[in-house]
Image (cartoon, rainbow, N blue to C red; front, side, top):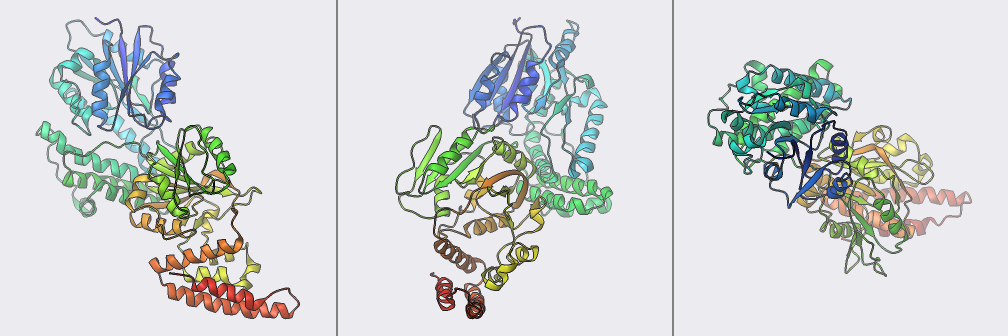
Length: 612
């Protein structure tokens, strides 16, 4: 018999932000027999190894490192193969076991008579939610129903709850054949079924319930998981025919509503999009109708998954834990170096890429920072594309070099992305004097450009009416809101989606490139959200002459109009506005103002004519 009583196997991928809570909880265990933690590092995407190693003097741990990417079943199989304990406990990295947790599991096995069948002990997970409309209407009640159902299960059905946290003698695990590493989803309950068939008695102990910190946080996430769960039944049924008996669709109007929605869902992305629409409607629905709306989306997604699924569906991978920061740079390295120092102090690890847009002097090397230097100056979008080409994170943060960040900024953006998992995000932004920027915008229309062009309207600058007139989203200035687009000085983008739409259109040199990108991302199904937290300080302004900035602005607007509207229409409207400006400026000069109306008009017209 091994000298170790218990091995705790923890699979983790992209878990640097989750692991400290779990490891703190394991460090507080009251078990008085020898035990170990086998952490299966399934690819170090985000500095997880350093997080784990910091606990080496507090937790009896070993690291099993893999290249990763082949699924959680393969990672678990590697961990169980390395475990030396008599009893093996599975514990996912987003759980918080109480101090007596391991001792409780071991006590259940120690109390087993020597001639009795092996025991498998299930710890159900109680989900922890923030106070949201989704949690109140569906998340908490659904979890409570699941727990009640599990505790009432007859003995021959308990294997269905063999999931995120359980324990079994290692000898019984080996006798049942272990995890099937080719299973990409439901690898846990599939093992549970084989354990039960091999003679293991499975019990579900309410006293060993464990806290689960990262359940689905909204309908979009829950519907996407329901789709994958439904699709995964195909792979399960290939191995165990007849376990999932065919169930008739719900009857009546409800059944018809679910069936109709399910026929329009052909992918996990479609399921998430349906859930996102329900999330957007929740605040406007009566409280009694919210749970029904969410249940409709979830059941429709599950039904569609069963309809179109095959044996290749994969478990969720963390979509927001590995982050690449791309800093576009040109000219003086001082502000960029200052930003890099702030990024080095972040509480959440990041990959940092500086994209040097062929500065007169190459950007200096900095430890831990990748520098990509372009051979020719191509402007903001082309430069970010160059940096994004080397990014490895699940998400990309584009940050101007003239920003000031709090040390928790990246962690706060990761948390926001968990709430908005398929979205472009922008933090709240203020200048060095505390004045808040208008981060959320409406898609540009001719009337917005004309309002900004007209000199007589400048006196109203700062009023809500003026901000609305030029396309600023006034609602997003006081509350978190979904908007058409956000300014690009600090912008979070899911990297796979950025690449799927081809990144920035490099025909834009400076201005309107982020609007064009976000319009294409929205067509792909992403939302765009202006956050209220975290906050960054943006010095802004840059070093370019104001006339150059204005010319780049107009060039970008004309190119955007070429793609999404009418260039000629915009030029005609701005020409009329220039005429109005000429008349007003002439009247002001006649009144004694130091103005040159004709020179101003010629400059404006040269910008309006632009270039193709």
